[in-house]
Image (cartoon, rainbow, N blue to C red; front, side, top):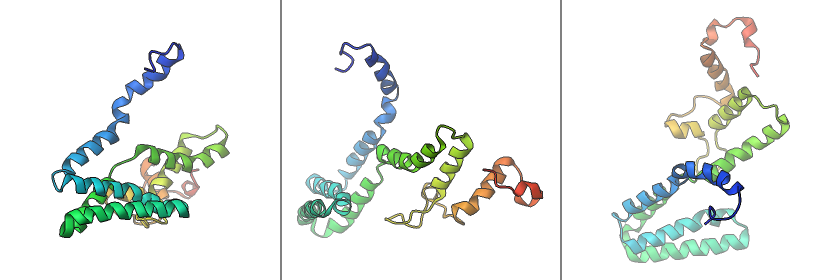
Length: 197
């Protein structure tokens, strides 16, 4: 429908979207596969109730007080409906469904989070951001431990690799720089101890 509009700019706008359409739809494919797998482990109606409860769970903690209470009521209502259908099987299935749904990567929220972290640095650089600066920002983001939430105390790189961090990111940074340069810290001369950024 968009392509049928009479505008010369539309084909140029749509081409990059069409090129990356498969990448854009990856989260939907993941969700479909997850839904199919969950349908094999419990009654469909109970699973639908658990999905609705999961949908309201994050909003019950993030919204303002009036909205928060409304989301809490909705979450509790759908959990009670699922509990009535599942009885003794409720707790394990509830935990499984919530864990599986939490594993879905919502790309836009991750991109927005990274963009929010980079925006102050990009704004202060006023167009003079080098690749080295971006590498430093990337390293600090990937190795900085979360301060709150269910991932508190872990870093994105630790979640990805399954290996805990040995030290804070600022202590790991010199090791990373020396590794990239192919020089071990013990072999460095005194002039190489200057801060690389």
